[in-house]
Length: 203
Image (cartoon, rainbow, N blue to C red; front, side, top):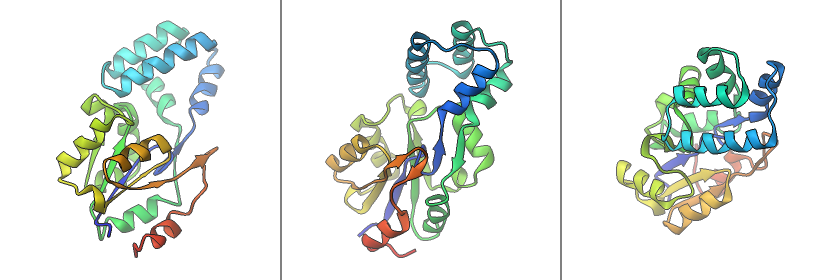
């Protein structure tokens, strides 16, 4: 039996492509060396853990890359990388009419603000846990324990859906039902409706 759902954001509800942001920066004359890319990756990890603010991220990116755009332009370029997954979002909204549905994501405030301004399910969901708010990220078991405690979930009757196998493995170790939802080049390899039907979920 499944009586609640947890969805990941990136590549599950919303496909994303960081190359879009990188290409935009290149068109602005920014050169991204491998070392710079590594530094920015580490910077983004800290950003998703809430260790630095959006303005601090912007200032470091400017310093590392010579970026000239203002903060609002940077915020848009950094966030305009998402598109709705037509396989999952309409289905998730139907599920919400029958079940509690939560969002669990390694993400940052700029991306959450961007998605929330454009896509209703962000506010329609029964609740959420974002890494930058709690200072811990998947696959750390602690973030799953936060979800369990915050929403009084029963893992054996809660289905967790993620595109990263390591994350679903950790969730399974905590007794969640899990669905690994692989995505490559923005295209899912499964039909979520079919997978839920196999699990006895009628929507």
